[in-house]
Length: 177
Image (cartoon, rainbow, N blue to C red; front, side):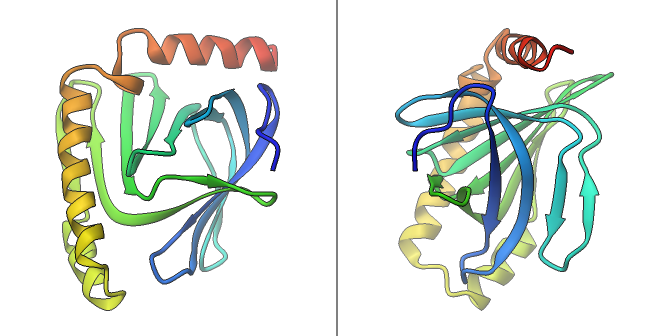
């Protein structure tokens, strides 16, 4: 697939380790692509769950995906500040259909006040046994939790000063909001 250009839209598909489709986001606007990453925005984006339930995102969110990191980051822009939802996941790939990745259950939520919470540890343990996560994947994911926490603590990547303002402003320019 050709790399999507700024202002174009892509579909995002999240899968589980067993290959089942987990969740789909339709029409994520691309803000930037590079050899290894993609930055986009969801704003009142239609989301479809694996069981067919559908809902629409409530607020703008800057999304960050990387081809070498085993996580992706969603920065939700809310009145009380930015909240980050970080999925421990495979690096993404892009094909004719969508940007795709495997969601590995573990999440880190960062609140506007900087508080961090590791979420869904029980779900990770359950799915690890059920879907037979390989030991090397388990190791990679646990190491990437450490990398992600380091990024959060040291303001790297999507957690850096001004990052959200820059990309949200670019979105407003592209969408004329």
